[in-house]
Length: 618
Image 1 (cartoon, one colour):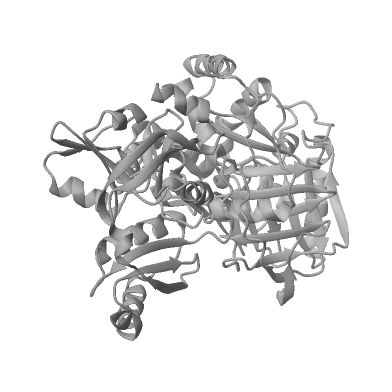
Image 2: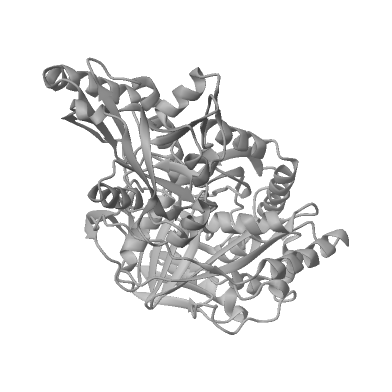
């Protein structure tokens, strides 16, 4: 079945499904689109599961393509002796499973969207920390009794979103670029999946699975990030969790694969995503000739990474302890073609949206030495995708000083490359350097001292622009005030120089209108972080202090140089009162170096958090 190429989507009509990202035949915004179904097949009772999958098999054999989802609770129907029948719809009033039957698929691009910023959703979890601790204690009791080895325990976040669904989809796609991405419009319910985990892919008789288990946050510096990555790689707890799921999947595939064909080609690999590192492995096999669709899903669904081990007992505990049905979350979203090519994700990082109200699931694997507070924090980490919706047009950029040559060129290119690797951008250092050299010869040598801006797009395209820089740009002292709004120290995007800097730009414009040159921000703990366009350094009793990156800020080029070359310069958490009592306050960046500042502490720009900041100033 060949895909046609004549379609551009700017929204998703009813019963239309779009698959992109890591799904096969997808690249950038281009993806596979299933539209205008001949019929829609819904599963509304787990007692009908066998008959439902037999019907799907018939449609495949008739030459049709299928696309849709299998909800987590549909798995109960494969084990009727272990679970009572599920008659009701899922928590989102969706069927237990849904597939459209299609003549063909199209290869589609999404049209451009408005690049305006889309704010976060402020999700609320369905459990307090105390309630969560109680549930974890119950699971640990069952583990201690030998009833289970691991349980994947999850909860639900609820949020409201009143904008167009396509803006939410594009924004979250930018936050999770390395994902098996899907958008389904089913009876007005928007299902948006940004899963990094492949459930299985099938080509002919070959089946490939890629379980994901083991999580660590991204670091705020290159050194911290690598330390966290290596810590995850060598974590006995995470390795044990991952190996349990690998063994479970080996057992599942062994039920339907040719004896001796099941292998583990990849074990404990670390993959990095914008907000976290994950440990993944892979399990492959060769399906026996008589394995049909019903037999395939009966053997491996739901994926062991979202249940625990042993699978059936873990699922029974999940049903007993979780607050509500999971629905599409932790099920599988994907498509099947008549030649038996199939591809499904594990529906994590997945939300449903209906009439402005959304739900999003998050959880973690609980083993004998799990700490409830840590696991609760992991749920929040995985919900981080909802907290800040950078637009799809997000770009990386660097601003360099040209004064006969490029100052700090290698350092700027290093930072650009690190951010590109973290956020899933293509980046050719050689091409950017070549362009900068040509640009200098063609323009900068005549223009003189200049501010040069390099902007990198996600697909690797980049641009170079410049403007002359007069002597007034280097004058000091500079007038500095405080910003009232807090920043979030946990936001990993603060560590990258991106065009998604709406708060900084807005507050800096307000500060400039009030006669100031720079504005300093504090995080949610009241700690000084950085200025809108510079880092902060203070001098006290002959020593220099600058906030650590863990406060939430950009790793500035000049800041790094200053710390590396001054033996009396160290990192230290600073508060507004530290700046007031300092012998001198400086702001610095690679463009203007280090400039003495005059601080105006009584001036707060923006009034959202003025009272809280004022408390620190007293």
